[in-house]
Image 1: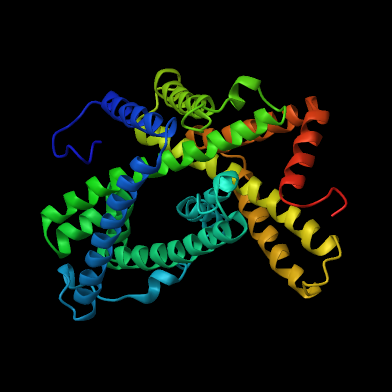
Image 2: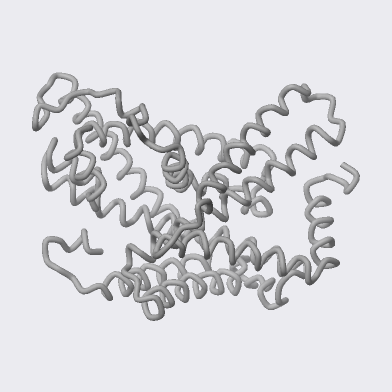
Length: 363
């Protein structure tokens, strides 16, 4: 919000009001047939991505022909780790790399609403991961080159509120930066909607299977969506923002940083559990279609995930850096306690999920 209305200074509370206004719109779309609103957001996001790619291409061209501001040029050192960088710092940065990719697996939460989930969901997950990976790596590398790889450029890169918007101002035209910033705001709303929809389906499924209040398993008669679960998810997001603002006295970006760090660490825990489940399903169940040596792939993934988690809690962070990992640990422990307190319901939920996917408990 501050970037949208720059250069005029806006009070800190405005960011929260702006976020709650967007959240209200997201709630309105999440509790009804979301296809119409989703199409609008997807078209807007598609146009924004197109503009970003165009700016990236022009910027790369100017860097290539040495026509960039400050004599900057193509510099492949952006793909290397700076000398003297501690390994722990690299893995702290990996968290933000995971944050950039977080959400590519969200299509899995819509499995019960997909006509052919076994075909469409793997395609959506793989396609999103591949496209997102190439997009983020290429665009981020060009942004870093555009700012410059010297100390001054790195500092400007870290301080930028809208990286590609600032690149557009320097390398193309200032008005295009506003297009990108506004498009990014719509993109953030689309991400929020996807998160709420995914969370609502998980809340609905867990409540339906006995792990939550039955009211959260309600489905709207005409819209056929878990509207109460969706509203509960939105309320939860709003409460987190309110606690960050009123109780902790945090600024909007600080609330985002804390939530993003905690959410990504929790996501890594989920990735670890999913990978362990995949190893058991594919390599322990006796499936002869998979070659045994391929177990090395999930093992390497577990090593990367485990070390990333380890480096985010060891050494134990201090000060404001504690909130993100602390919140992640609290939520994870809360989930463990909830499952331990109701083992029968958790077992029944797992059995039902296996049955829905065509597996048995012996698999």
